[in-house]
Image (cartoon, rainbow over all chains, first blue to last red):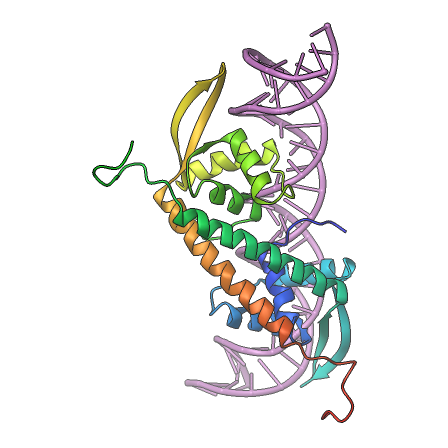
Length: 118
Length: 118
DNA sequence: ACAACATATGCCGGTCGCCGATATATATAG
DNA sequence: CTATATATATCGGCGACCGGCATATGTTGT
C-alpha cells in the first residue's frame, strides 16, 4: 500500500462513501452536492479511481442491483478506507491550521507602523 | 490560471512561505519541520514546483544572496499566492468537516443494538 | 416518431505534478 | 580526505486525473 497523500477527487470519493454505500453515478452527484456544484468528478476519473481503491482495499463492492432496468454497482467504504480517511482528515486539519496560523503571523515587509523597530 | 486543487507538496510550499520569505533548500527543511518529519519534499519536486508557481504568479523571487559562499534564491508568496492559499485552506476546511461529519453520522449496517428499529 | 437529456458503466490517450536518480559546487565535521 | 550538510538544477518515468468516446436504458419535450 502506498502511503502517499490522497488527491482531492479521491478524498471526496471516500468522503461521499463515509456515511453510507453508494453507486458510481450517485457518487458523482453526491460530490457535486458536497462541493456546492464546484467539483464534478469525470467518469474517466471515477471508474479508474474505483478500480484502484478496490485494489487497495479501501472500498468494497457491497452489492449489485438493477433499478429501472439500469445496472448498478454499490460501493461501500472498507475498514481500511475508513482508517485512511480518518488519517487523511487529521493530517489535513493540521496543515490547514498551520497555513492559517502562518498567514496570520505573516511578517509584513512593506508597511510598518511609525516608531516600530526596523 | 488553472483553478485545479493544489496537491499537498504544493500546498505545503505555499504554507511554508506564508509567514516569511525563504529559499529553496530552507523550504525543504521548513516543511519537514511543519510535518514533524513526515514529509520530505524532493529536490526534483521542489525546483520544478517553484518554476511552475513562479510562472503562475503565486510566488516571486524576492532577492538573490550569497551566504557562506553558497548562492541562494529567496522566494516570497505573491498576492495571488496568498489568495490561492486562503481559498484552498477554506475549501479543505469544508471538505475535512464534511468527511468528519459523515464518518460520525455513518450508517452502521452489520451491528445494531438489540431493540433498535430495522 | 424522434430528439434531447438523465441515468449508468466503462475504456483510452494525453497532460502534468510528483518521485528517484543524478550532477555540480562549496563549507564543515570526523 | 572522506563524508555530510548546504544549495541549486535537470531528466526519465509513474500514476492520478481529465476529456472524449462508446454503449445502453428510461424519461421528457416537440
